[in-house]
Length: 228
Image (cartoon, rainbow, N blue to C red; front, side, top):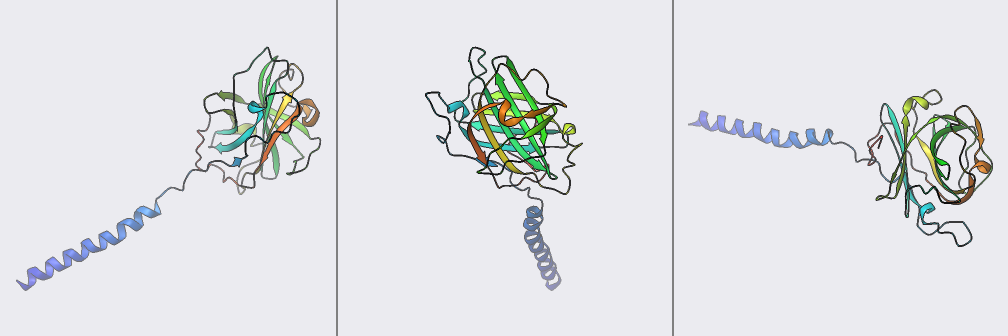
């Protein structure tokens, strides 16, 4: 009888250890929460003057995400409609970020002559509260999507167009900034790859901007679906 009681006690001890160890093991494999809302901005703070409706250029937020093959940026605005070729002035959406000390620009140009989505690299970065001309060189075309329900302008491109300039290793992605413009001109005249563009004068009149001090660790999980 005593031997059987000792055996039962030993079994209980084993089960007791299992109950203690299991939660700790599960906790060690818990994934970090996805990164969301890297850029935020209050609605109704647009800078343009005049009777024009700025709701489609009124930034309320933005995000950045990437995997091993693709990079995606998102700009959220108060309202969004599809491209309108009858509009005399187009809309331009810009998303800036820095990686490995290199400054990149993703730009969506919704113009009367057609829509273009392109990536640029620049030696200059505009700091919050400042303005000025920036020369940028086109590095590749991006795929653009307008999500009219979510009021999002999304731009994606192969990571390979950025990696000749930034490895995305041993670095964070930061200095996020978004801009909107009321555009001048019919189009950007096709691809800007290899061409130098003056961002301050070639796009149009600035309407809104938003800045962020947050950082993104390359390849981190995001609430944004990369490539969509």
